[in-house]
Length: 301
Image (cartoon, rainbow, N blue to C red; front, side, top):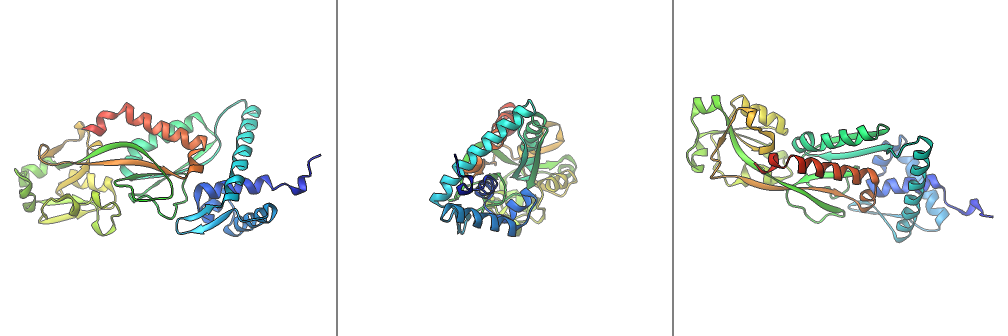
């Protein structure tokens, strides 16, 4: 007969699995509806039961020890078995729980959001949180299951998955073109107003005007939101450096120096290995890729 008193708590193992995926006790506590203190206490109890430390603190957040890796493997088996049981009881293979994704606001709204809606439609018991933010891949773990990031990937303690490239191009409103004219050469940008990100708040420098090698404009309108930038260009605030997928042909905006300037940037999905083994995260990555495939013309324009 199995002595259950000697076995680690399945609940504590599942908490460890969530820590491995999110990297921070605060994020785990929020996801599980409890407190940081409770999470810490449960991990300490698990360590005592297993006879060693399952986690170690690093500059990148909590990381698994060798013992922790073994414990997480057991936790993943428990999670899989519970998911199969839940599916049989509900006569469904639907996913449950909470899925957290962070993404740049433009790409997040245009491509990630439809993918998440699709996943949730197929899994109505799955809760979804989409966090908007244009930033580098997190070095200290962001408390999400999956990060979508733009630009060059530096060394991170996670697995990057290339999703697609996209283009930044110059646009202006027809009213601005009528009032100020349009530059005939890149050098003529210096005589115009320019719309872009707030340089002082920008983590992804490739998105800003300063790194574009374009001349400095007379004046600038800067915003942290790409939606505010698009609206500002529509309102005639200046020439904008915008993702082409945010400017459909029906937008009414006028391309500026299309044959002379563009910038191509990559988009990546990044997650811990433990998160990438999650069926929900795998489903989201596949759904985002499907969105990209189905709408490839918007990204290659």
